[in-house]
Image 1 (cartoon, helix red, strand yellow):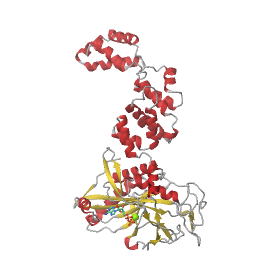
Image 2 (tube, rainbow, N blue to C red):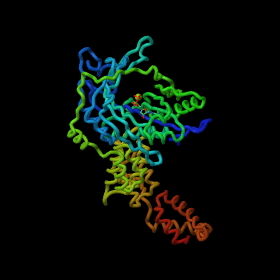
Image 3 (cartoon, protein in one colour):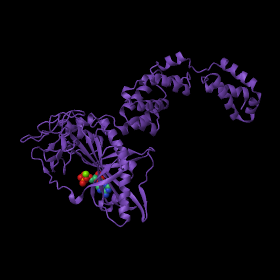
Image 4 (cartoon, rainbow, N blue to C red):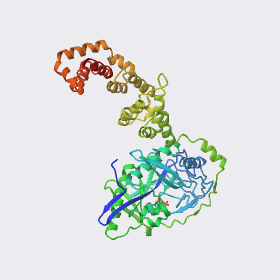
Length: 502
Ligand code: ADP
Ligand code: MG
């Protein structure tokens, strides 16, 4: 990620970016929010549509208890207020892929209130994004315009699927911060098991609100809480990748600055991001905005949660990313950076902990193990498109490799070769080292013979070492060459110093 600034230098002075996100996360659930129809990717068109989803006359919605539980769990994971009383409203608008003619959503009284998310910058520093609310609502279906030149088709499989809309305060100031926020949110949801976080399938997507203001205005907003200090926002709908989120913001902020610098004003509008052009374009302006005529859905009772039930859900929460990160740092002495890389995927952290605990004498070198998991192994897995849960190299196998390095049996350099062979299923680290004769030469007798021969044949180089201690490097290189890289560097350095001074 390149370093993006919150400041845009204009002709009339600097401008600052202000960003607030509405993230739609599909609830991980087998059935829809108000019907028993299946939820799942890859089914044929309209194979997962109940009479309720198709809005046949007389059909009535029935709330899916599991989806409510997932929303509560998410609220708890976001350290947010759980509203024991909430209710569903009808948001009225006509869409061909929403046969009810209204979306069932939560408006004035959402199930989850204020919370917060702590987000990491690339450099490891953190910032906090306040959460305004989280509410449950139904997704719409999908219109297919590319199946027939003269007709639009509709697939209602998604219609009625449960979404959590998570609304942030406008607390992000750069495109990177917005992407980092979505990343962190995704990590938390995946840890909780309340959303699978699959952005490619559209299971997590963001509406990005962008405005610009003059330096100092944002601070006034934070002091007073009054949005009037901020500029007019535009909302970019349904952006579903980190890269697009960033590109859309960069484009949109510049577009707004240009208008303002020319003395114009920003119309509050909904815009779409076109990834191929890298531009946003207007979808509808505020004047065209729907009058949704919200009212409580008379088909549904208000949600009335039992505090004891909420407590029981709370007891099922897993260790969350922030807590895991803090624990990895204190328990294993890892840097914030290493801990952050490990906790980004729950399974990666699990793999790491299993590897560290493996092998004899109370476990492996924590830092060294972290390096192997986050560098070599991660690179191989990414290149192969393999999830760490399915890694062909197990935690115990990595531990064995690390142990061989720790014990000085192989050098870190040789270990890279061993790792590649492990990846190619040539055997365990120990088997490969034995079979390939890769054991480090620490035998002083064998090394001494090589060193003595080198000194005898190169008296000039040997004499140099007394004046220039770095000249010892030349001997190290020669010995490595003679032993095929297997000489123990610690041992040869000691021996050379003893023989040559320096
Ligand atoms: P709507 O349904 O009209 O989009 P919401 O309250 O659901 O309204 O969401 C508004 C979103 O816009 C929130 O994420 C909020 O933080 C953000 N927002 C509000 N004002 C601004 C602003 N001036 N600049 C950037 N984002 C803003
Ligand atoms: Mg909105």
